Length: 101
Image (cartoon, rainbow, N blue to C red; front, side, top):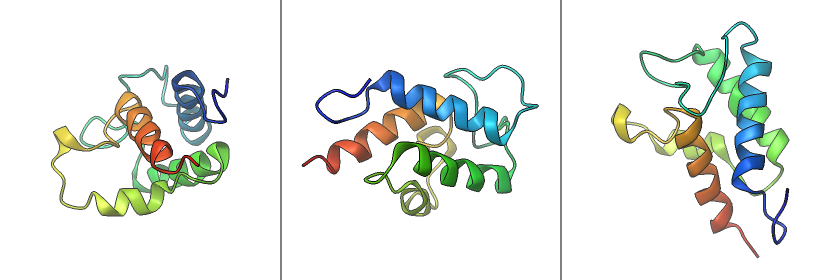
């Protein structure tokens, strides 16, 4: 549910999980610890890009995940905000808070 016009953590988590399930329906159970990037990722590179596009559509304007992902070039795997569902949710919350009116 939106709080003060912003998506809640639960809304963002649901959007991320729904997007992963949409992009990779055979990935099995998806939870907050599911890896989206790195060696244990449930998505290949095309699936990951598709996930970003799908998520941007679900979350609406104000969250530019594609640009944000490109800015992470060279980041180590442990600090990558796109590593797991949980780290991506936290990253989206941070991006959204920068775009609050």
